Length: 450
Image 1 (spheres, one colour):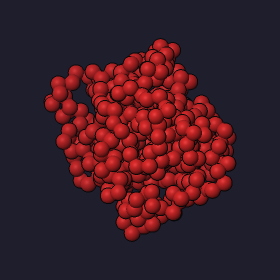
Image 2 (tube, one colour; image 1 turned 45 degrees about the horizontal axis):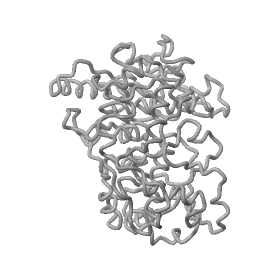
Image 3 (tube, helix red, strand yellow; image 1 turned 90 degrees about the vertical axis):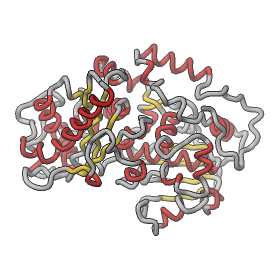
Image 4 (cartoon, helix red, strand yellow; image 1 turned 180 degrees about the vertical axis):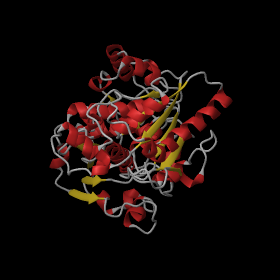
C-alpha cells in the first residue's frame, strides 16, 4: 500500500515528481523487467506474494533523500559505516535508515577496507553511496558508536535509553548537520517499543515483523553480477513457491572459517585454528571428500538437532498444507558438515550453493562477497527458517523474506568439535511443529537483534 512517511518536519516537495500510488514507479518497473530479462531470474523472485502489499513505498523519503543530494534541501545527513560480516552490515544499514527516516536526513553508507555493499547490490530507489561525499562539506559533524553498550536486552544501558526510550529527534546528535553512526544492534523491532515513534511507523503500514524486510527491499537488491553466479536449477527451485523450502543455517564458529582460510591461502592469513577443527575441513565444497566429512558423533551433537527440527517441521507442513515437495536449503561455515549432510540426507533433499566456504564467509574479494550475498538472498526465498541463535545470517534472511511465523532458533555451542558435550537445543524449550515458531520480540533480543 502506498502510505505517507513521517509527517513531522517534512519540507515542501511540490517541485518533486510524485510516485504513483503503489510500491513501484514506472521507471523502477522497467528497470526490474530489464534486470529480469538479462539475468533470467523468475519474476516471483521479486514479486513474491505479499511483498508489495505489506510494505510502504517510502516515496516521501525518496524525495527528501534526492533533494538533499541535489542541494535543494537542508544539508542533513546520516552517515554510517560497517566493515564486519554481511549480516552486521545489513542490520546496521536498516537501523541507520530508520534513524535517517525519522530525523529527516539523507542516508549515506561509507565503505571502509573491505568490499562495499554496492559491490554486490543495486540501489533501486535512493543512492545511499552518496557520490561526491557532499556530507563532508557540512562542517558540523558528530560521531557516535553504539558498539560499547549495545545490549538491547538490558534496559539500563545508554543505548537502550537513547534509541528505545527517547525521541530520536531530541537527541543531541540530531542537532548536527552530519550524524555519523555505527550500529551493531538492530533497531527495526526496538523502535516499536519506542513511544515517540511506534505509532508513526504503524501508521506507515509497518509492523515489527516487516520493518526489517521492507527497509531492505527498498534499499537494495542483488545486482546482475551477483545473480549471474546462481546455478539455474538451484535458482528455479528456490524461486518456485510450489516447492516448500526450509532454510537451515548452522554457524559453527570462527575457528572453522580460520581453518578454511588456512587451506585456501587468504589475503590476510588468520591465526592457526585449533587442531580439533582441522580434520573437519577440505579445500572444496560441496563435493563430498571422504577426508573432510564430519564425524558422525560430532554431527549428531552439533547439526542433527537442526535437521531433526527441519524434519518435524516438514512433517507438519505436509499434514497441514498437503505439500508435495519439501527441500532443505543449507547454509553453513563448515565443509565437513556440508559433506555429512549430503551423505546422510541426499542431494535431492539438501540444496546448497556450489561455492567454497572461504568464498561465502570470508568475503574479502568482490567474488567472495557476491557469493555470500547470493547465498543470503537464496536463503531469503525459503518459507521456513531453522537458524543458529548466536548468528545474524539466518535471522536477517528470515526477516528479509517477509514471511511471518516462520523462524525456529536453536542454540549451538560454537567452536566445539568434540564428540562429547551438550547437543544443540531448541531455544525456550519449544518444539518444531508448525505452531512452535519464535515470536519476533524473542528473536529480536538474540545476538545482534534485527
